[in-house]
Length: 542
Image (cartoon, rainbow, N blue to C red; front, top):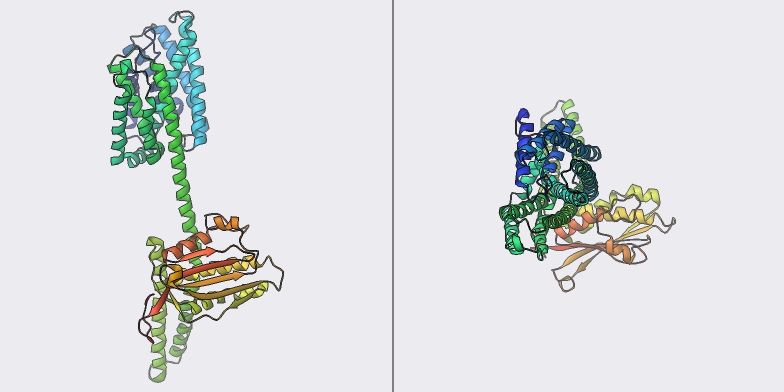
């Protein structure tokens, strides 16, 4: 319908033809030869058409209702009453469509549990009201035996409710190009054949011969529905419950099983559908939350990496500016030979080298975001701490915080320097925030380093870098959740910095953890790099 593959002038004729096909296929076990059957999926088709086209769907729906009475049932109520009843059904169903359209608009009918429950409430209450008026008209016309009004209202109401609840989600998905595409992507898998095959097996086992079935083992039908819902969400569930309903209807129609409790069977199928839809929506919501979390982590990583990028590019860009000014000065002297020529050549070479360094930084960060690639190299621990600490000198001085860096041994860790600087920068920033709660004179941050031997770590020798602060520390309760997304002890924190930092450390084969205490203690450990030949800048993992 929306973005229909059919030409526009064929949409409503196609709707009428499909409506009649549904009407004929589900004209099962009718009462008094009237349109009182236990499964009426055709109103689901009409409601979706109404959601898409509004009141323009009224005339084709009215035509479909009249043709159904004539072609499928032989017009048992006569021409005048048939027209009157069709007018009422068009208005009654149309009012349900109006309420649905005002509540949900033209999109998002089945995208949350709250909307699902709203939809069920509107459909059930609207169908019952519509059916009571419809049956009252039939009763006044003498087509329903006295005293049977309540039974036929229940029977027709069940048929409408089951038909809409089971069929409308799938019809809605098929009504738009986006829905068809998503349905195709979701169910076009070998796994779909698996649960569809299971549904056929279960239908055979549950009913055997449906004429004598008492539905004792109906609960087995939950197996393919739960499979589809848990693996493919709402879209897989919509296909599965429609196929099950189609299979049950086919068994009843082809076996002429008119003596079984078909309304009871249809109510069971409606409950099966609602359970499946609820599970499917929960699965979709959990996947959406997971995707949103991944996106948030990517944004947090982008923010952290932007800081690293700004720092790493600052030095080569500053150097490029200085060398450029030197070149400009030398050119102004208009002397390209001798000593000045050599100086100019040297400055240009340095500019090329620094521009290459800046390009390498950008390339490595780009590769990290695309593939998580790392450039492992020996990173001198003392130089790392010195480089990152210098970025905090202004803030430390402003807040009166004393930073103490213990004597660090000349050892290197095997890591991606940019990423490890990001982790250390995050730990120092957290420590700086933590100590600001202390009175002046008691604000201290200490950075220390030690080697963990292979017996202690079980994975080879490691360098352990510890950042301690004089803040209030981490409680046992907070420590248990500190590295979960969106958990932060800071009022303005997003709770993603430590999550990202731990992910980086684990990608390096290292670890990051916090210790419970009366002051802040965070420790990070990375594999130790050792020199192959003493005196040469050549390293391997220890």
